[in-house]
Length: 271
Image (cartoon, rainbow, N blue to C red; front, side, top):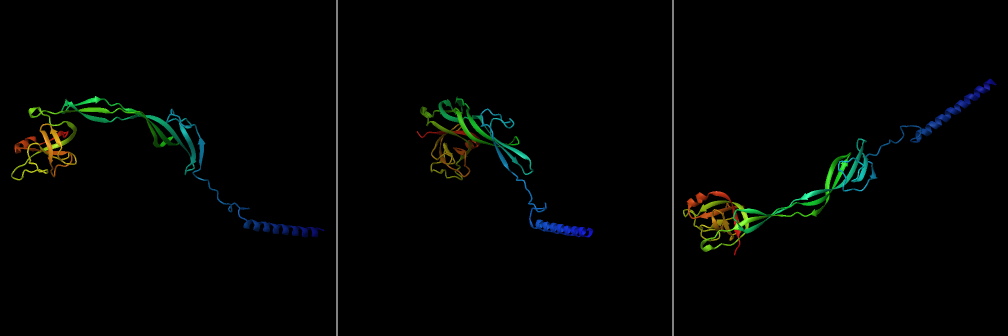
């Protein structure tokens, strides 16, 4: 009897061992079962963004108020590259800003040459700007003006420029002032030893002939130059470029005495 019990135990042990071998082979052929190494690695998605609606923008929002505050239009929570949460938010505010005025000039024929007067003072205007600001963790990272509305136009300032010309012989006034230009004036004399006395327009070089840059003062323009008198733009010169003029004198000494000086040239009407 004892002999039969030992034989049965051996058969049972062999069957159990065979069953264990069978289960081990099945596990080896099936990925992800019975072994941790066979599982696919798990990765956390970076940069996931979650939206959270916040109150609509209000005009009285305070820019440095912490989230969530009136004035935010959206708030975004996102995970950064270091797995840290970043609070990104957008806020829209309206801001009152001044509008600069322009300065206009008019010629006043009753005001002496060289005198200026404020005819009307300028007044700044006002505009309402819509400003969009982007924050990351309550730090301002971007700012844009996305709209502007002028609620009070500026009033231009008007400066009156003296244009009262002196009379010439027999009480005549040669034209009226229509504009001014600031230039540097030099003097020249058509020395017969090197000059034929002819200008670029063909008129003889004499007192009253002014050399100009035609792109600044067109040839034929009538002028009045303080300290010199009436003249006409009738000549050009290689060194006369931009806001420069050359005044013709009758003698070399006159030209030397005048020398070189800044001056305001008064442009006259043609009639």
